[in-house]
Image 1: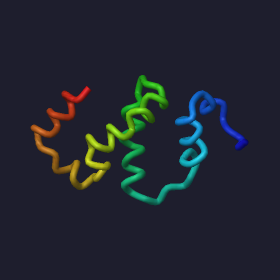
Image 2 (image 1 turned 180 degrees about the vertical axis):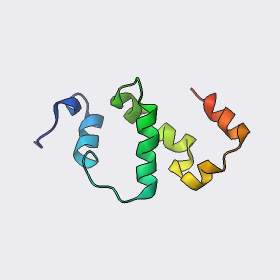
Image 3 (image 1 turned 90 degrees about the vertical axis):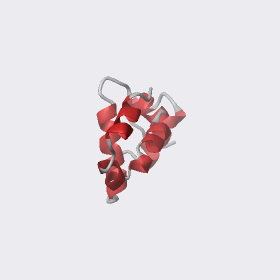
Image 4 (image 1 turned 180 degrees about the horizontal axis):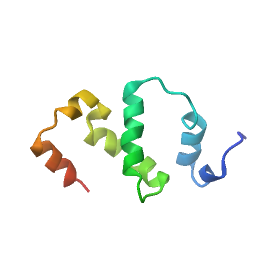
Length: 84
């Protein structure tokens, strides 16, 4: 059994995140941008909530393509704001 932090022992999703992503150096701009988006979304929520919704965020934000997101117009922004 891997040595794990206390915060990740609740669910398999948290354990997988801890074992495969937490503390692993990143050099991929898209992946770094993904974490900026997800960290911002976490305000007031548990990280588990964000992990459960991660695929929805990927879909909503075009796989975290920063160049594409930078070109979002008012209609696309309004669509995102209305997405529960």
